[in-house]
Image 1 (cartoon, each protein chain N blue to C red):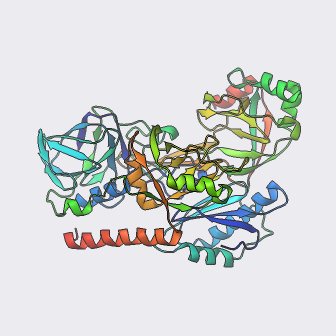
Image 2 (cartoon, each protein chain N blue to C red):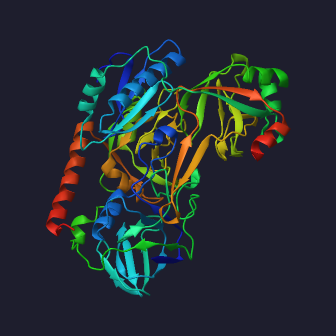
Image 3 (cartoon, chains in turn green, purple):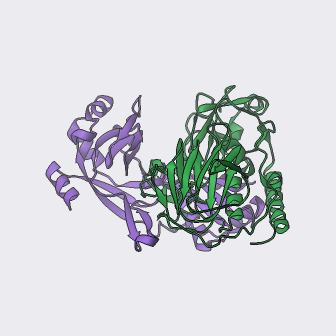
Length: 313
Length: 239
């Protein structure tokens, strides 16, 4: 059991998201930084889709029952009773402890995993909070967590079983490496010049970013298409509206949209982009669909090897 | 990837997606071919399909990259048998009541100015034919219905509303829809529909609460609107 004292700028409950319901108009949802979320559950000995807190800002909570927790994310710092503790590691906490954590720079997201079974409401197969759909969360209405909210978690172990090398698992959040993009959808309607502009320019992350999409600003990229009938949108799709400023579609994106798309950010680079903040800059690099898949599978294989090294739970 | 059958184009949609575009003489025919293809995929129900997103003339298929790659998916889909004659097998016909010109949801003045039609003609045209659900999306339960009669065609509002009331019946271009929940929107409002577009089922006791939501409209369904009075609207809401 944990109780929120300060919920930071925004704290929500997330899990791995909703499956197979996008055809009914429900968004996918799920953690913005999938890698941080995955390792969090691993380190506290939870199943991969167990809920966690996804937090922007600094959060304080009180531990009402001893257990194992883990804090992950970009630039995360955690303190138990005002003493610094390791992040990207399992931490043993006692009843009455105060846990504080935050990520930097401000606007990035941190994740709190807590060992045990989370007794939180499930809606459409997931505990994910989607404010726009009035769905999920503790009150079931899509509202974010508030001070004094209690989350009922039945812990199953008090022993730390996973020992990990934080350096080997925490992702490289640096934006100096270009973000991989698979050309697709209406890319043929973007002129050669437009495509070169997109792949050779630096884009700034705008203030207009949320769980639905990240709006970038930079040199204009426009297609020759005037009318496009609304069609399905996948995670990472890059929409280019008439103003030419690309929007990368994120976890809480609407299911259908009618703006031309030049391509899609590769799944393994979504977390890195999701952890960028307004004012930071990104560049894009074209990658073939097969190579992108190979890269992703290698990443998963590496993760599996690391788990092997650290020992099974 | 080469087109096949009624699939006139295929494009990558990320590591784990392919989008298929369908040919057809009319939007109804294109949409019907999308639905026939969706039925075939659902019947085959390969374990690697994670999402199926049909729309007007397109179908986005999201797959599990651990199990398959795009070449496998292409081979599977291009060899799949699609019943070209099948109608929407589970298609339902819905009759939805509308309190036209409800004060909370009425752009009749704008629509009348745009179309040159009287209020009564607008109502009789809108409620005078059956529409097909071409797509469901944007928000849960939002069905894109069409085509509305040509004389009713009306552009979107120049400035979208921040809040469209729940149940608002609206038109834009040759489309019509009911807003299932309060949301932003730029369509022209015709009135209010008291019917729920989504159903919530709450199962289980307090410690294992699960909520499921069913959307009323599915792609391929048909919808007809009929006018009701303010009193009938209130009675419907009180039920």
